[in-house]
Structure formats: structure tokens, C-alpha cells
Image 1 (cartoon, one colour):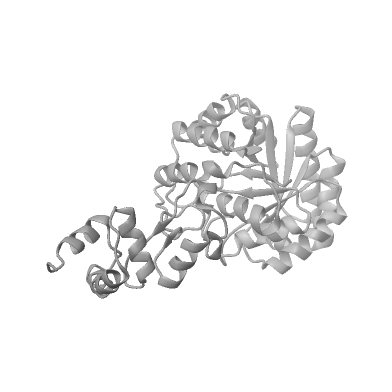
Image 2: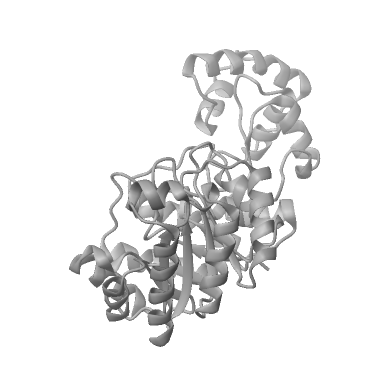
Length: 371
């Protein structure tokens, strides 16, 4: 099994223009917990009192999931997280020389020293500690392994491999994560970003390489182009890799719908897993195949994710589709009747620039010349 660590309430909210109220954070956390997510990163307490209050509310819900908070490797950050009542912390430091030198004006020795100080402190407070390796994708792999072993020696519980700016492809991700898994004894988490549209593929590559945890956000919301999408990782892991995440897929549609509303990020009709029209079949060849055997053009049953199948009637429809839809309306069309109506259906659809509703079809049927 691979475990999902959700960071919608932290990294997801870092998307420009996305703000969750404390009440919304509570609701999202409850829904994630009910779905079976093992860890929820609730926020960054060092941001101040408002964020601390929101994290406290999530931590106080009595969830089955572990509730964590994100921190720099700074003692005051960790103290702020402890004050919120979380039982886990993410402690993060840059590991690429690019970040260490250009962002922090420090060196590798300083990074390892700060890591040890922060991890020892957090473990002494009885916390579960995930050590984040920021910009791991661009780090020297020898130093990354040294960083991981240092975290391990201090008692850390997990190491987070972060493709912070989403620059890896799945082949690179597989190779780097596999080497890291072999170099350290800690469980490894992959945290991927979507700058080249590869976050989900990279998350799956990380699983194949031996990662035990995947960081994701609902709908993939997050910094810049976003993160790996929880709903897509869950379903692709299940069906493409045969790997269980323990997440109840039937809850995904409702969860995504709520996060879309709370974040102000509407779900596109064609969004994988939870888009409103991904199980709508219009093409005559496809619709005919699905009516005979759904597996012909569906990777998994729509019911698995709380959706339903629809045969759409529009420009690309065939006669069998039209007969099916009218039968559902209680009208049995003959082959000749269906053929006669089909050209009209296609013309109307072009004019409307969308498929026809049941009302449109009934109106068309009733407007036929009397026999």
C-alpha cells in the first residue's frame, strides 16, 4: 500500500488567489479523513495567529488521520506548530546547491547542522517528523543521500523528496527516487509539482521506484501550475499500477466539488476522475461500443467515483445512440425513424454548439410531419 499525505490546506492554499476560511479547512479535513487519507498537512503556523487558529481547529477534530504542520528548520516555527496541537511536523530545508547558495547564502554544512538541531528538538517533543528535502530534484544526489541519512540518525520518521519546481520527467523521477530509497532506511515520500504537466506521472514514477508516501492536493491546486492531484493519483495508482492507497474513491467527487467551490477553482467538464462530462459518450462508434460493453471505452466504471454514464446526442452521434436515448424517454424508434431524425439532430447540434437535451429531443420528435 502507498499512503496519501494531503497538503491541500497548506501547499494547495499557496496557489495565488486561493484562501480557505477556518471553517472550510475543518470541512476539507473531515472529508479527507472520511476518505481515508493518512495524513493532512493543515497549514503553516509560523504565518501568524489566524493560520494558527485554523490549524488548531483541524488538530482538535479528533481525526484518524495524522495532522501535521509545515515548518522551516527553525525552533520558533516548531514551537508554533506544537502550540496548535498537531501530532506531526514537516521540517524543510533546501538541499540543492542552487537554493543553498543563491537563496540562503549558506553552505551544505549549515544545512546539515540546522537539520539536526530542528529534528532533535521536534523528536524530543514527541512529534512525528517528516523531513522535507526542498528542490531535491536539482540536488547533488550524494548530498541528498547524506541529508537523508542525517535525518535518519536524528530519529526522523520520513523523508520528503520534493520536485519543488516540477522540472523532472517520470524517467528521471524513477531513477532518482529509486537511488534515494536504496541509500536511506527512512520511508520516502514524493512531492511533485506540475509546471510541465507531469506531477501525476512523476508521483506514479515515485511509487514504482519504491516511495511509500505521495504528497498530493485535491484537484492538484497549488503553487504556480499546482501539485499532483489526489483524485488522479488515487485512481491511476489503483488501475494503472495495481496499488491501493486506502482512499475511498466513491468520496472523491463530493470532496473535489467542495474544494472547487471553496477555492474558487471550478472543475472543467473534462477534468480526469471528477469532471462532469468525462463519462458522456457522443461519438457514434464509441457510444455503440459502450452500449455493448462499457469497458470498450471506459477505463473504470463511473460508479467507482460517484459518477454516471450518459449517451450524449449531438453532431457526432449515430443511429444506435439516438434509439437508446429515445427508448429511455419511453419512445421506440424504428431504424428508419432514427435515420430520418439523425441528420436533423446533427444540424440542430451545430446550431446550438452543444449536444441536445431530453427536451430538445422530445420537441424534435413532436415536430415531425404527420405520417
